[in-house]
Image (cartoon, rainbow, N blue to C red):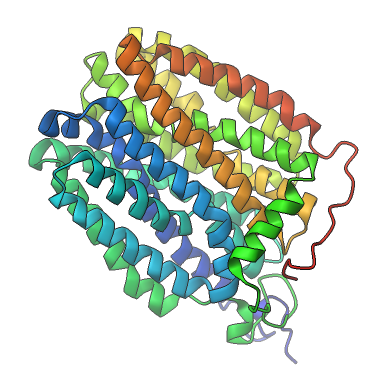
Length: 431
């Protein structure tokens, strides 16, 4: 007698459910995407020295990368629904590999903006958090919070794996070696994704992990219409704006600020770039534990309270950071511990709250818009922090403002779900 729940027979309960294979491939893909997005922090100073471009000019290209990475999210979620996971992931990896490889030939600042800002930004927007949210919703009926925590933590692991290596490559062989390494890593993933990735459990005739067999999701909807319909629906919801607003602050306080400018800030205080990259890598190790634990907790505790704690502790650590530089490596190590555990622990509770507000099936597209807000905040922080550094000669004001915004976010998230009205389903939305 077969028990198809979980995709296992009574005689084969030890067999690995294919959902875990899909999750593993997604983890590695997100890891490479994270390494790609972390690289600009290593490149700022070398590009300044070789081309004479200002910090603000380079930061603008990075900000455009972050912005397009975010804006691509909701459309990427709709494309994943329409064309499937495998085809979209292969196309995105090819776009990243091509764009990064071409940066080795650039000679003008506009080429940096076009290649790293636009081409790589759009490509990386497909292999982003919306991909993790889609995999978790489509392949797992149980343990979604834990799965999302693990997939989110891959972005921190990307820093752990790539940043110290990239910093040493830039120091020993120049910044072009960094571009070649990233392009090669993205290209090497293409055959792995093509071979092992599957769009949904029904393609293999199995149920999602922990669930029952379901029919394949319809794929007739126009991706652009699906994404814009979700935005129109979300715009009428207070919860959407609270989630988007708090996630804007999340982006402004993580990859837009610390991920982009911590290494240049370390150099300002006489701390080598490799040491700064090692601090970011240490944060990656800590966040791997913190975000995975956050996913586990999001299945069990009030997600609003979790977010309030996360944003509050992050805000305090950022307010401490300007003083940490005065105590050099040891002061920064203390910052790395508290900030690292909290780096992107906000993602699993935010995904869970989006699913609760807008429904499990529609959540990836809605989360795409919320994630776009995250990257809009990151882009603003990346560019404005660069301007502040040029104008004031220090990043202290940028760190302080970001810390204060995090304390504000800890208040905003407690309002999510209070007095909620049901969100209507538009006729143009899928499902």
